[in-house]
Image (cartoon, rainbow, N blue to C red; front, side, top):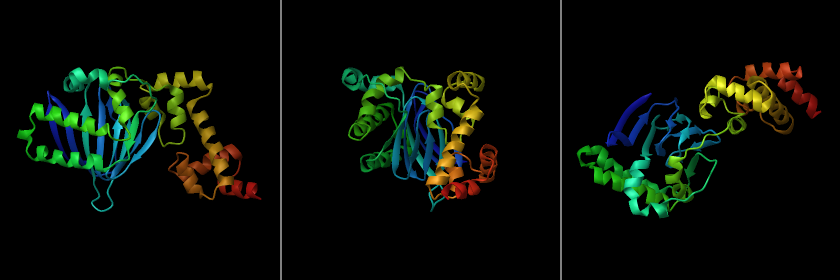
Length: 280
């Protein structure tokens, strides 16, 4: 549930926004022609990209390139809120900001990553605080100032561990990539994502995703994913001290009873009996 939202627009599009959310809340944004920078003042988010899983915590930030995402927001233990500031990067705005500097700014480089988490916190903290003035005084958020604020953030990011991503960001915005079925499936085999959600991350309809899956893996999605998860569960039962519930969660099942039923169908014994048998 979104408790409060403040936003600053430029040329009819939201360029900076601040959200206060009461988790749990799952969002599934699609960034077709923009990149997005998120700073979590309170709480954080589990972010699933087509090829990665990233956890961004309090006072941390993440840069998301063009693509499709799932974000599960979680709360601050004290306030119970998730407080996030979002800055949107649009190609035409970047082009206007940098103009003659673009040849330096653009760096052709292909990367399979969609999201980049920043480890340097202090570099960004003061910039985020400076935005509060414009949220409190929206009449001061003039076009020229907003261009300068976006440029300031990008120049700050060039001094962080996402500098290489910033250098490629401009050209990438005009040529967004799509993850293939294999990348999405292998990245989220053990995530609690449905086939619908995997298809969404791959940018495909469910029927197209299923046809492509069958062609690539020569198996149905349900059978392939279940067999892979059971194989990993069996390995964890033998070689780890994790409980059955912990193993169930780790391979993508929130319901440990359901996991036990699937495991019994595969190995003809319950997980606890399998562990005892093989550890002996």
